[in-house]
Amino acid sequence: MLVAQGDLAGARARFEEGLDIVRRLAAGDPSSAGLQRDLSFSLNRVGDVLRLSGQNDGAVRAYGESAALLERLAATEPKNAWHRWDLLEQRFRIAQINADASAMRTVVGTYRALGGHSAKPFSARWIDELEASALEPS
Image (spheres, rainbow, N blue to C red):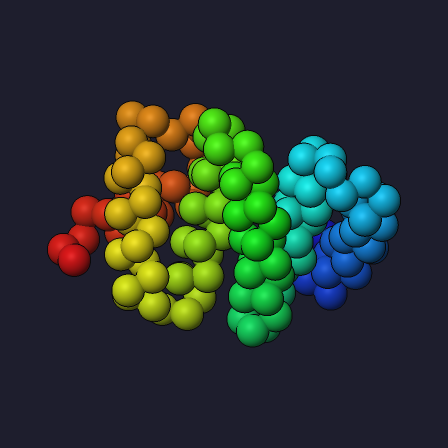
């Protein structure tokens, strides 16, 4: 709500408070995949508001930390498609911010390897943006 109202500083403060809480919970039970995924989502929220605020370095750090968590989750639960899609989203966000064409090609390749549009388990704006990137010549 705060983001929609344009209060990015207020949103960041709230998201960071939530992140602190989830960090403590996740640290108390590091084997909980659910808490680790919650931590990833909290990092995304912080990264999103940093990105909207023009603080791309901070956003990349938050997305990178999220990606590292998701890499561990994907390794421990290789049959969980959600972890792979969540990880792909983080890599996409980082490649977008860095305007990294090579990383974007890797993301598009991974997207296609996961089955592309027909295999996506949900709809999200980032997937629509990724699909548009996939259509661009490499």
